[in-house]
Length: 102
Image (tube, rainbow, N blue to C red; front, side):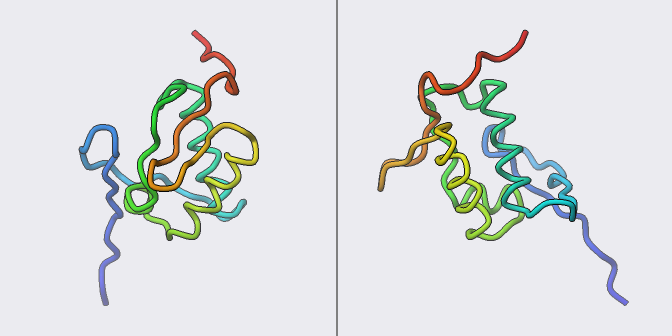
């Protein structure tokens, strides 16, 4: 019998290994990922005008499929929190997010 291995993700900002975030079955993965990214954006990481990691890096860091990452990013684009340009990347929009609470 094989022993289950603990998933380890690499945080794009630090490059250090950390346990992958725990997802629940209550909501679809793409929605949970979008919530996590949204919370980070609202905290200012990344800040307005800064670029998000590319899809492949998010896929690897969160341990999900590319489709899940794309659906999460689409959800954030629909809300106006991020914008993407082909071959340039995806960045946080300026002026669309509430100021981080202190």
